[in-house]
Length: 152
Image (tube, rainbow, N blue to C red):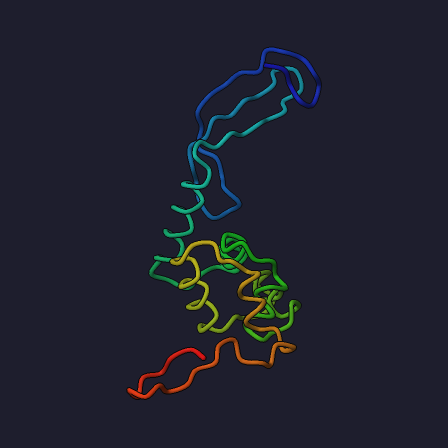
């Protein structure tokens, strides 16, 4: 295999434990170039791996570390702005929580853990729910002659 950095062939392949963004140690295939030292990491079944790491973090019997909050937020498929809008805080506040500059509320951690349990969210749908321009009702109901509520 050819090195992406220097273009030389002969990369060495091994299975090693590697650090996954500071949240987990995982086994992965690592290719190293003997010429320049470049390292390429390949994860097997990445979606399953990320899901398992997210579940393990959300099940942890302790408060989450700030960098773990950021990792889980990204796992939900949302940008910082998406989450900030969703919880009614500024993106700057969320950033301070994720960087450890400010303590985050336990309620946010609990909400994030619940979001992880549900898997990546459809953030376009979440944004629609929070759109203040949409003031008209989504459905209209009335009672029929039997007293049941039905769509108009």
